Length: 390
Image (cartoon, rainbow, N blue to C red; front, side, top):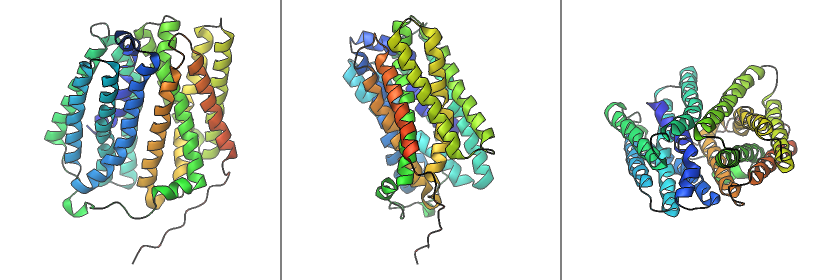
């Protein structure tokens, strides 16, 4: 159940991707407007986590979760009957805001019940679900387009949410007793202090830029592969899954290599691979004539490198904040989603019949991440315990 709640983000983003070209065509909308449906959902997921976190600390886990799931159900059904692209964009924002409740509560419930090694084990299980969801979601979405339209995909999302809502209402217990609930925000490090910390900010920006490069691929690949290169929605789903498997493989490689190499060195390897692959992609697209044989390997390396970037950038950014890991993690996640949300509409500014914007943005963000890391402090401070208030 917690795995299903954790997967709300990738499912909401990836499930309808194979139908995105059909969606924009039905509304007679531009590619950029269609990609705003991705941006709106990402912004909702980013902002919603900052909203639902304090709510679940004050009201308990169940009430905000059930309310969020109920709103997500209504928003999904409304998406299925949206009369135009702009209404759909607004409803996708609501979908993201309400869907973030599941992401927040899944993590909070684990923290409420267990700690230490057991918590790490459970979080690892949730990460497996989060990793598998973006692989399966576009494949299932592409397969279902044989029997339904993009509108039907949103009805299916509503049905999945209804099942999770029923299961949560019936079987998920309240894990935060009243005596442990807070009526005010947590004292300690403020968001402003985090932003002013050059260590935290540098690694946050590296991760945000790398994620923006990946999301440029997510937002533009449907149009590049389906409209320009004639790939079917089903084949696109397979390509998307292979690239997502690359992230899983890279993250497992990172896990094994950390015993011999520092997180910063592995992070440098990841951003370098992404920058080189994305720049090569841009050269291939500008040169023309190479086709999928040149494009697909570049996309794979650029996307797979995220498996090296995100774990190490997160570890380095949070090194100094064991006493404020929750607040620092929230800001890190918000920045990550915000960078991705800003990248999505830029991919379609030149229309849906060119791959140049996607390749250009991927290269720019990848090079930006590499430059930021090279300019970032090489040494990470060791946090000192802070004195507890009397």
